[in-house]
Length: 270
Image (cartoon, rainbow, N blue to C red):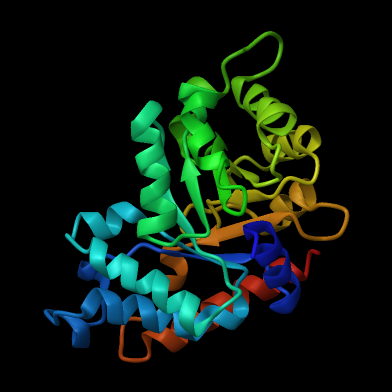
């Protein structure tokens, strides 16, 4: 199934715009998992199984696995999601960006090795660096636009012919790159008014919205500026506030509770 179809079905089926980020940090795991060989997989799989009916997507962060030499665990985790929770798409958070054969290999890595349904990418090198991802018409390509970090404005807010660079990025992707209808834009919850400006130029293109939870993004403001006319269009990501909501053996249930609370808070403003 096309990534966009999976996302739309998950929005409706689970009545949710929540995306759970999977960023494992063993230093924050419950004590009973400490030192266990399968701790990373067991922790992440438990979070997935506890929240899959409450989310529209999962977003594993590749660096959190690679730093632990756990790329094989990431492969198993994505396969687990597809097997146990079919219909919930997986966005591989890799922020890849390169040219030529290297870009092609990054696309193979994301879609064939890991089996992700979508991948994050950096558009800074231009269209040819993203084309190998876009050619996978059934997969999602999530492009950085106005990121949630404070330093994002160093370049993204620079004037570019009368509009900030991030808006030029949004305009270009919407008008020229999205021929297969498989593009999304990353727009941080920490800048809701700027998110609204992206929505105005990107139409109904889905927006991946980090910055809710630990980074302090405001749910009501994000919904006000970012919803499409049908009440969807957003993939609102939260990682640490969900993953580490609990510290005991009931950590997965605590994650479920935190996910439910976020989903309900979002839905109250839809």
